[in-house]
Length: 357
Image 1: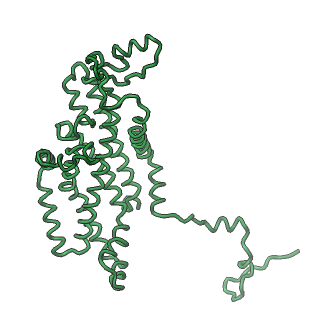
Image 2: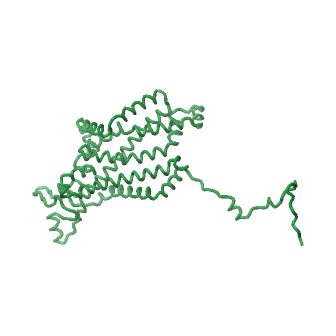
Image 3: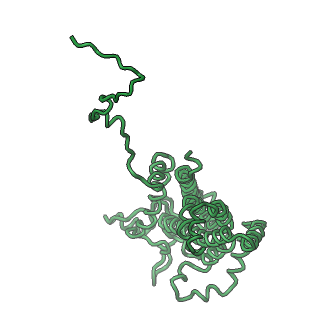
């Protein structure tokens, strides 16, 4: 019978049992390896766990794809007056049709056994299919919001990074300009600039180009965004650059003789990319709302091209009889802006390191 020897805690002998090879179960328990990942992947995982932001993103994608794909197969055009034909008298039966109603010619074709594509939202006062005009209006609003945000991003990124990195007189002059623009009433300046630019020869300058179809009012709107709406982005990026330029890796890059433009592009901007993405995403609904507001006042896109704001403005004339014409573009605007705001909040929660502990 073997007896276990008591180990002396003060002995200098090596415990051989401590050096036995570990079993597979012990290795699996002790070694907990995390797969390699990146900041972007971690942010996407956190974003996908946010159900509200994910649903909002799906809604935005569905609306954007619908505005691009539906006009490819829809049988009616946004500017086609159904009751007007060359060499024939105007058929007023197509004007102000209720949803799923038909004009006199269409009813005759249906009685003859032909299939006539329905007017889902009826027609407007000019006899144009209202559904396709809503689709085109959604496309215009999304395009304006996206490109206006890109303009704001480019100008704000350039001005904010230069002011934050170089500091001194550059920062002082830039911030005073920003303060002056901040002191101006936003909507009043937007309306005044849009009205002034409308009276210029901008329409003659774009005549014969692809911009003619968009119209001078939308070009004026982009100019307004370039003049007024970059200040928030510039101030935000300046604050980020001011805190990042004191880091050790920036000092190391300077000591090796790196130029300021290279340090901004390779070190500073990549390290505040999360703030840039979040701010740009939240700028899009603001641009869409501004475009809809100006179009509602008649300073938006040129007729007959529709936008959601101009459609809502046109619907005011028959609000007592055809109230749904005002409700439909209002609901679409609200849905787009709400989805973009919720998605922007989700991006902030997912990509802002300060909120992730």
